[in-house]
Length: 245
Image (cartoon, rainbow, N blue to C red; front, side):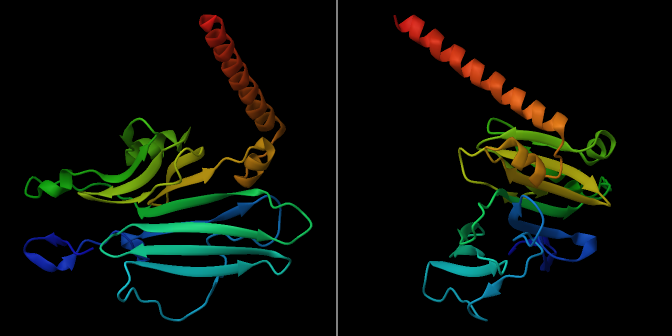
């Protein structure tokens, strides 16, 4: 970012993303599929059309990457950059020429170094929040490192939500498509805060398998919750109809 860490350090710029373990900041996206076999996840090797991309005189630049499992499934992932903006749009398009239906979900995650804050009365920035934050569609909440380590991962399911990591006045955020249900998860492991989101397929069994929690109890719980939700909606509709009469 084109902002110095301090006024007296003009060449030491704020860095939110980078592979260095001591100041780790990574954003990963992908598709997780039901079953075994190759997947277009964050570890998949994508192919590019060119070795060089440049915005030039354009206001928008699209960088397409492609992946195939060699069996008829192809994924085109496109990164869109805009002049004068830190925003990057990511789209993933699936072309399935296999006989079997593709079943899975899209996901994204932020990996950010997490460490104990060192407070100093001589440095006001040391009292600024540094860590993950989550928005559930109505309100945002900062998640304390100690709470995540003692209480475990924080999970919610929401539409119109987002997750981010804050460093003083700056943040890296994942903002999914609006009006789409996603499961959000934030945890701390090995001094790394992992903030992730994954879309929820309509099929409960597929979703549980994709996130690695498929069990009879889990499938029954999600099925019962859907039935209760359907009953509530039915009751509200009938109540509205009765009031209209």
